[in-house]
Every structure is written in structure tokens, then in C-alpha cells.
Amino acid sequence: MTYDYNSTRKRLVLPEYGRNIQKMVNHIKTIEDREERNKAARTLISIMQNMVPHGKDLNELKHKLWDHLAIISDFELDVDSPFDLPDRKKLQTKPKPVSYKNNPIKFKHYGRSIELIIKKAVEMEEGETKDRLVRLIANHMKRSYLAWNKSQVTDEVIFKDMKTLSQDQLEIKEDLILTDTRQLLSKPRKKRSNLQKKKN
Image 1 (cartoon, rainbow, N blue to C red):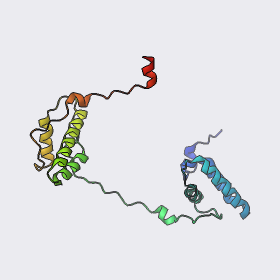
Image 2: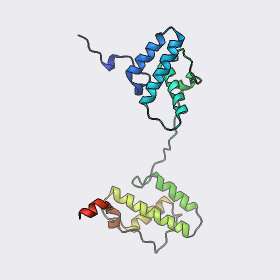
Image 3: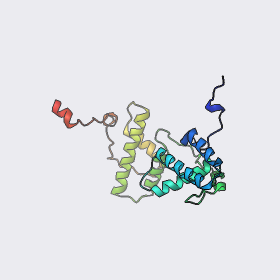
Image 4: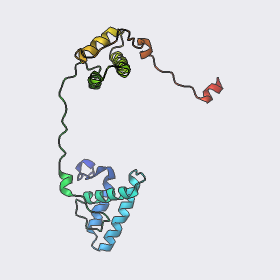
């Protein structure tokens, strides 16, 4: 007795539709009568449509499904599609590699985003808006620091790190006081529903 395992079967072109759809496509390719072949293809499109979530644009979905039908058939299914077939060469073209910045992050617990925000803050004109942004950045850094290290951290440590990240270009006001550590570490209480209030 031999067992039919998926690992021994031919690889599916679009696995999200499953092996039965692939079998149906293979069967439609063997139908000699063009009218019957077109009818079978339209029926299969309806089945595929019920398998995938779709929004309001039904025409866009149908276009995508006909494209998928052509891809599953390896562009060998001769039917009258209401849409132009996708370009096979474009589908086989590999996307260009994404370039990643290799610049090391100075403080990993703050992340690269903080470095970029601090850079923007340095470029801002002095004033109330910049002061508010500096305070927001400092509090976020303190929260991030505590997420990695639950021990206490002084505001001076955060200010020192801000100076380092801004290359001493960011002015920090002497009267700037950050949110208390206990408040940053405390978990917000869940609001009770009206039903729970009535029970109490």
C-alpha cells in the first residue's frame, strides 16, 4: 500500500487556493470544446471568489482571480478572459534588493527612531514647540530605558544620553522635570463596564 503525501506531490503554484483548485485547472486544460472550457473557467472563478476575502471593488477582485487562474495554469489555459493576461516576464522578475542602513545604533534600548527624531529636533528653531518636543523625547527615552531595565533611572542619565545622541547640539532646559518612574512603570487600569458597576 502506498500513501499519497503532499511532500511527494507536485508543488502548488499558488498554495493559498489548495490542491483541489489546481486539479480543476488541470482538468479544464484538457477540455477540448472552447465553449465548455470557458464555462468551466467562469465557474472556477466563482469558486475561487468564495475562497478569498474581498472588499467593495468586485471588478478588481475578478481581475486578480483571472490573473491567478492564468498563473496556476502556467499560462497554458486557452480561455476568453475578460481581462488582459499578466505579463509572465514581469512576474518572473526578481524585485530589487532593499538597501538597509548599516549604521550602528548607539543606544539599542532607545532604537534608531529616537536618533532620527533628535536629529529633527536639533534642526528646529528655538521656542515653545521645540521645548515640548524635547520633553516628549526625553520621557519616551525614559520609558524605553525602563522597559529594558526595570531599575530606577535618573533624569540626568536621560539628559546625558540626549546630549550624546544630539552631539551636544540639543539644549535641555534646567527646569525640565520628567515623568516619575513609578508613573511610567504603572500599568493603566482597565475601565469597568457599566454591567460590572451595577454588579458592585
